[in-house]
Length: 468
Image (cartoon, rainbow, N blue to C red; front, side):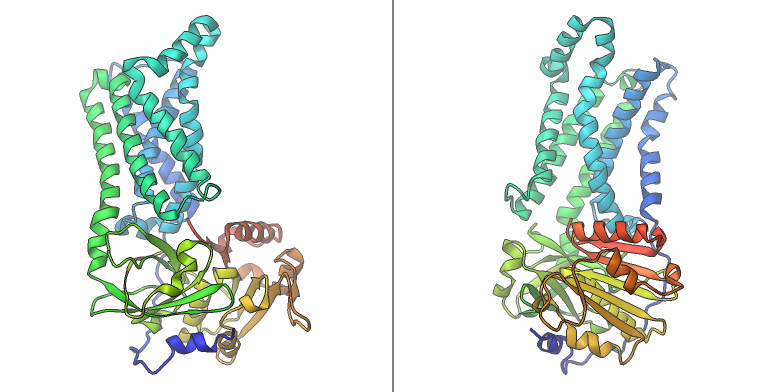
């Protein structure tokens, strides 16, 4: 389908406010910086333990296990902050970075807590293996440690469910609810376990209250996400203007502010979209914004039909209420200053990419811009009329990549491998360009690895994987 029908949905005769180019601002900290800060903060409780005169050094292995246990539990509590969508925090860390760190840390925490009881008993095998087996069994059966066993067992189920939710066909909405409830139960049980058998609290009562306070803070962030933020979002309602097919498997959903309230964003950001009609309903999904700030009070999204919710977007009614939690994200032009910009989109990754391209057009950007856009079939390509017209106002070129191209296709055949990217990024100053990469997780990882092999500086690659 041509993009002309879709474009008319946004660029019709509805009056729009005069657009003022955004002011560049300092972006959030990098992912590496966030990771370093996160790990340093996680080790604070272990360091505080040595402030007690009753706590002494007990050998390198015991101290290592203690540090991993206390640091790991601190990071578990920190997981709530990373996923809490707290504006004051995410504006500094970047919600994209926070969610990425949340996922990566979660994988290592799962392994650490699985090994936790075995690491505790391991030294006893060096003394007497017979007694060590009995000690291991007692960890899972004694009343004093049952709270830890319950948290440990539930953690295993919780992690496996997160890892294999797609393979078992678990709906996204059901997973989100069980993920949040399970997390609360696990940290409460784990906190009770820590203050029950932890040696620091036996000597210093404030240490137990320290863990209780951290647990309460972690749980409160989930309460904030589930109840406080929806109340704020309820005061900023949107309504459905249109939802039409853009290409063969993508929807183009357009919303409009339903009232007078402040709402702004930067191209490339995303929101959690709730179309249930109830701002407190947890059936919300993250989608990247496909429009420029100059299109407000309207805002649009490119959404690929991949699941039950996205496949039925055509059932949305014109005028239906919708609520947006956001904007979030650092996949933006803010804080960047390059000699040129390369936009690389795979499939529905064109959503935030077209938003950035539209903003560059509205800003009358003077440096060169290149778009590499890949899909399986030509009929999956969207916005082609609009994209081709952008070359009239920008120093712009588009390169199409198809795995199954039609006859007389004027583009590249295959996937975005090094052979294709070398042809596209052939400028002598390519190390001074910025590269915006968006698509599925597999596509992003493959292209990012290829770009690293091409010696493109890591700090020049800004990427976003679709979905959390």
